[in-house]
Length: 124
Image 1 (cartoon, rainbow, N blue to C red):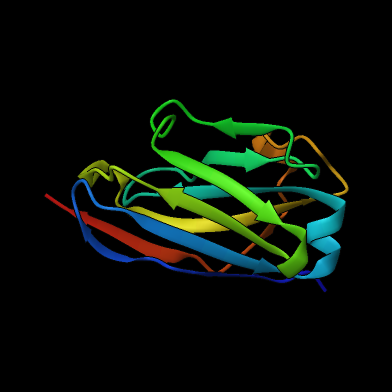
Image 2 (tube, one colour):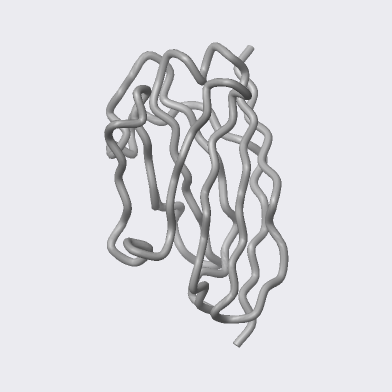
């Protein structure tokens, strides 16, 4: 059973930083791409960043490019999302996701397993 557990969300002022963490079961971590999605109120869930199995490939949606950094570490089966220069429009529930046996880290449809989500609120 693949499990993903996020942490690190919270309330931060505009311009501040947060780091999200997601601990995965070893199966998901080793065999597929990992990514971060977010869903703002009234909007669809969107893929904002993904990373390949080997860490060589990364993807960022335009709105977070240059501000967010995704990384993964085999030693502790964890994927991170470092979020800098946060804006009020970054407010959303953030979800970690896994694409088992797929390395298509930029393809939304490949992500099949989800964490429970963590709330990020950015005040102006």
